[in-house]
Image 1: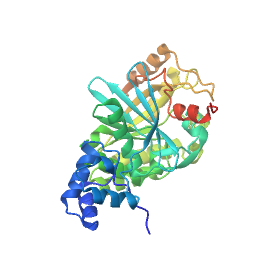
Image 2: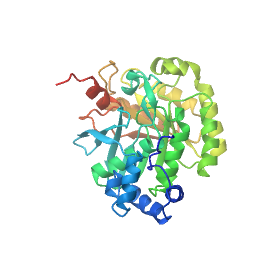
Image 3: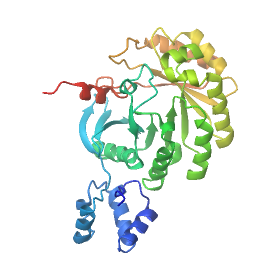
Image 4: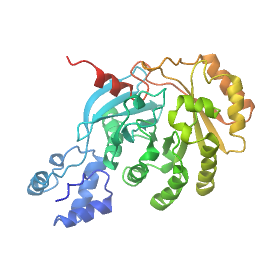
Length: 352
């Protein structure tokens, strides 16, 4: 007998069809949809509008909503909230709520761990355990909404994992966020460090699954040349910069959407104005935007956070070269700010 499928991640039509297969009228599917997405129910027992006998029958069959349990919450002085969530099979993932004025951005994970091995990232130090399912991704947004008592306005796939190694679940999650939680694709960003031949596939599957690809694609460069990029991102040896940029051009041609490029500034390593010049040359002809990110230190590496004046000089040099650029504000620095830090610290802490 097949394992019960968690209900979170299913849209209204799917829930109505599922209710019908359970011998229930279609309006039961509408009730489930309202309680899962609008009310944020965590269990079938909470959905008291459903007949008690049916709830007991579903529970006996192992049917769940698919919500993750909260393992730990960390609140920074600037209002950033990081949650460590437990999956049904006993693994853990991070998600972060980042408030800024009227905005609340949720940074979601797409995998448990990550296989890319970026040296500056705490997540990659533990390797990959598995990819997340649709309900595990969507649950992160609901969990942040519940923890912060605010409706998220934006979602960024910049947490644990490489989204383009889990493309189908990521696209299904985007469809759910838009169709069931009322978000717009333009409020969603998918970040990738680069997986060979994945960008054209992402564009094609987005057009097939979502009808259009209006979410923002953010490509993590972190270096203006192949040698340094391989030093920082070991998997980059299989994906030369020129091939990556060719795929970005293909993505733009298919979707009509510009690409955003992310660049983590590491003090004394890749933050010199001459490297900004090299980056500008690399991106010449692109309709693009560069997002500069000051490095958040992790214990396992001795990279340094860049000086504020180095960040400003790098930004100014790109601007002089007519590259659209912004500097991402660092958030949560007092509470395990870097991706994967909270999970790694708690998992490696000695038992009390």
